Image (tube, rainbow, N blue to C red; front, side, top):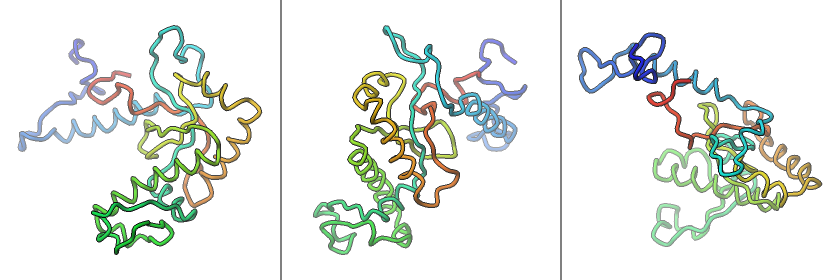
Length: 216
């Protein structure tokens, strides 16, 4: 191992080792080591019930970003929009692709719509936006979207982060916190999402972390 670049090694395997046949690809051993290292990095940053005071951004400190909230999968956001008949206006230029609809009611869609890649991309993106808007209205709180550092989930309904928890919790209020948590616990588990989604602190993908840049 080159001690000057420990981030480029995993269990004695050089992560940038090239394929002996295809000079545009990594070797099989390197690819396996990269995958193994990413899982290790995720395990070292697993979600948790609480974070320590040292992980809160105070007095100008800049700790790694953690968000508290409920994780979800793309499919869950789409099903949520369908169950709640959430609607979105379709701009005139795109109406032909949606059979002339000026407003799309997600309850009118099914999985056959996902066969068109462009429409599928629109539905997935729009459903997440509509779900968040609906949850903000139900909770009376400015919820944000996070990206939990895991392959198991696609997004996070975030109440706050370690950077803004003081202001947001003060706005939410201790007496209202239980109500908000109950709304989200029910809302994020009303469908067939597996495993169950519950409130935890999640390390965010927006941190500077990666196979070729992190050691532990």
